[in-house]
Image (cartoon, rainbow, N blue to C red):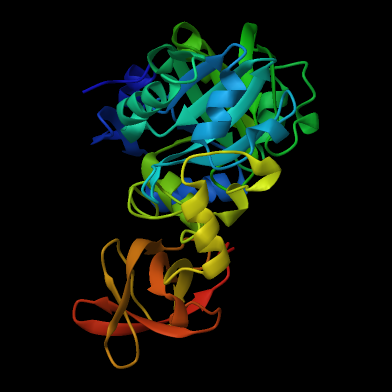
Length: 361
């Protein structure tokens, strides 16, 4: 099992560690609900060093990324990032990812930890006919996400960069707590505001300690993967392996906004996704809120009033903010209109729920 550069710290502060995507990672420290509300109301720090980072460089860099991703990387100015996905050539998704336009002819792709090897193999194979310079830097880069309404006040103590100038889905590279060449981005997965820092493994402990000292007055806490999941679900953000995978198309998943057909750009699955966009799909990923007590879980059946199966829960939890059961799932299109009543089968009981617009909060 792999470990991140923060593993020793996680052990020292009493994290509950579990295996996740081949890494030993903290699932919780003080408890999921406490950590969740810390991020919603103050500031919390996530170790997300298990994520993968690929560099794509040279004169063919944009050609490769434009061919293998659904969004339009040609629209990125320097210092901008975008959310995208890798279509798999069969109407599904290899992975979802972030694309950073780092320098002219240099991009960073940030991919999910569970898919690093699969994604690297996919990118390498597609690149055989294109010839960009590609590098898998995943094992050399650490990443922390500092999230919450007090994140800016915490990090501003550690840098001369005006963090308020870093708009959503932009980034800068500069000095934090004396460490050079730190990527500071704002692409948060919690909906609570904040930043992600990318840096060399060797300076990981130094940066962690400085952040926690700076955030002490705001009640800063380390946050585990458990609260990361409940936070992202309240925002209706997809999790690869639950809400999207090799069998789900971005159009079905409500990711048409990251599937761009402009400029006649040729990309994997363009024709199939164009057809889905024009002709519609038979199922849609939708959010729902339970109107009775219960907690929906991944894999639970969604049924109609007659008890007929109309879909399946892909993600579900008890929302700490709403104090209600919330979830996402693929439902047959005739039940996908907002306001529609559906039912979640929980221990042989059909619990009523309502299809709602995302985010939940």
